[in-house]
View (tube, one colour):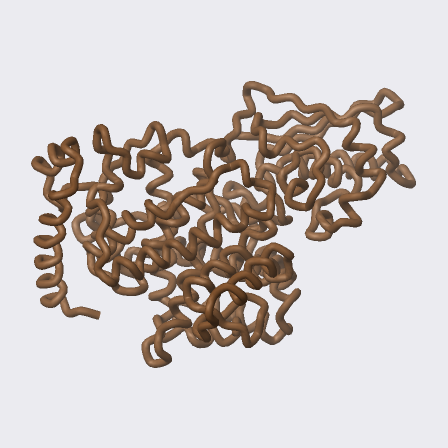
Length: 503
């Protein structure tokens, strides 16, 4: 850590050198803007200043509590994700193609360590390998892009220099906040994505911001870390519902860490990457309606974190968030059928199944052929809930996917897209209508599922999810110790008690 005086000297020196070097290469339209703006007046510099200067006292009790729930859930889904094929492929690739570097732990692999950036990558892949990680509004998966990189840094730092639990939470919240602020610069970002997977873009930026904070980079370096990350961001939606989708989160975590490390070494990038500059696209390359504004300086105005006003959605089963609406709607019908005292539910009783869902092509999959497609199929999740009354981790196992009775129901499904049902996680609903051979019509509708930010999981439900997930790879004593460490994270003088349970 630098003293305030040293930091001021470094910033003055860095600003003078970087301004000269940047001006030589800037596009003329950027130069026109540069003549009228000082670095303190740009959106980009305001983000760098926020990352470097925001303090733990700005974290309200609500933000602390919500962010600890996110940390707990992310670790749990990461540990469970370490049992998947895609995680194993990513880990094997890293171990075979790169020199082993015994630095940072790997989820679910006691005794295995990788370099910090590779650990951030494989643990990020684990977090999203089953699409079981948290979701925010506007739509993105914020935790999996940030937490693996921060934990890799904690493992990287010397034993006598480990961050405190509050330092970790501060950096984590910086990474979440940056993602939320960037998403709110675009109305397009409110909707279920069509072009690119949001965490591959804002997640990379959030990881860079969080890592810059935990590494104590100065203001200019924080801005450069964001600009470098922007050059490393992006992944197309065409890879949704494939084994490559988890790589989006893994790369976001890894490349954000790389951006922060490169900035710490002095690598520079555009000082206006987050600004709207006519003729030269920065972050506006990702959003057509991008309209940024500076972040207020925490010392001048008390900062309110977005997590204070916008809670997180935690999934009860491992699938795309949109699946939770149709699953809960279908479960209502299943309960009704059971209530009619039918001894067993047979697809032969059903004549027609109608789903009323938002129009979103990549989650409209009539006959999914893999677990990843099934996690992104309105039809599969509705029919599974009709058969079983719920969707669970086991619902995506091969034997469950291949059930003849499930495929019989899938063949009866029709889909409608009502105009009042937008592809927006804050506004959408799921409706299932089942017409029986008898002529009876059963309807189920879900406007807000249990786990949505408007109806959040209780602490008890979240702990149960965590224990089930973490218990797949850890002994009960370690699971209990992790719950204790995370729930008291702000009181840990260093992160060693947390890291010890993940080794």
